[in-house]
Image (cartoon, rainbow, N blue to C red; front, side, top):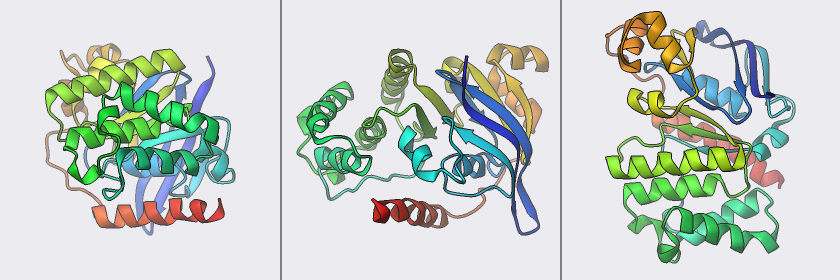
Length: 269
């Protein structure tokens, strides 16, 4: 099986602070891969490097056969992403948000309407296509963000805390849909979540990162066996400790970085 993501000796420093410390791992094509860690462990920094928002200090990255450092546009065209923070335009309708994203990713005009209708039907939002997003509930917005991330048929879908704050029914719906797309399209899914039961239920393999280093990687069953625990949450706490962690960097700083990186591409398109 080919690798969708290859990471080798990846390091990212901010001044004297090492956020990601010489990590290596692969993600197989068509795999659902969970990347877990406490706040400040290095997972968000890793995702930013994989998705071209940050350059590594050292090491190698390959995403869908391209380098996120030197082949930025090729990498971005090949993945979809659902950020932890809301990224929809609340003043646009659901349809307009989808259409804007389709244009941004170069989806041919002849395919746009068909794909938008199909995806909005799948996430049960077609009947609300002409409503402004500001009138949507949190669950509806999340479903729309996932549909939008799939508009260009990405080979990899990055999901950063996709179900945070959602009710169990919506969470169950989203994971069912993501697993269906994973099987139907052989789409690789790279997910971060603080819900350990989600990762245990849906992930083929799990990597746990702490203090910038990967402390273990394997299937949920392998990790539980290795740590002599009965759940992935127990294993996670055993490997990373029970001390409460603080977030590193403000949400405002993260959003500013995303807008700067993606805005640069939009200006070139």
